[in-house]
Image (cartoon, rainbow, N blue to C red):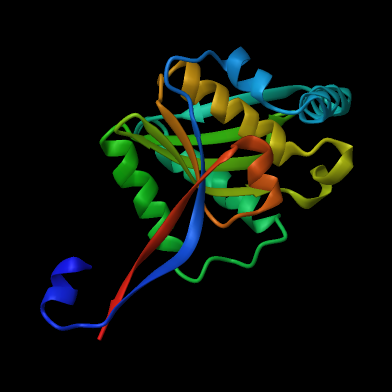
Length: 195
């Protein structure tokens, strides 16, 4: 901003959004969970138990090009059964996944119930940072019943800490109460407007 001011511009700083993060350098997953509220921990435990009562559960995290078409298809089947509108450019997300898989940065998480995908999350891990990019779940498995989106998020965070050894978790833009349950820090995303 100083260079613009020196050139005679009027400069105004503008905050566009917040990104919700959590530093994870040199901590264990148990340390991470210890930072969460007791209510959060109890809900995760209860949700896991309730889901287990519905059938056989399995967590899968695809990391590379192996079977990428199968995993992308599973991701899209969950999206189709979710409350979210279809993506306006579906090929974009698919190709971002493929590009991330080629360079080893893709983490495509799936929660399966009796072999059927019911929740999915696409993360990108690079430079010591795990960035949540997209997440979807089948409507009938959400809410107080078992919150499959939350269960998969906890699993993804565990994997990012234990397997990838990331220094930070980044849940992306938007300051929602839901994100604040998983991560306690916020960074401003902004810029300047110069006239």
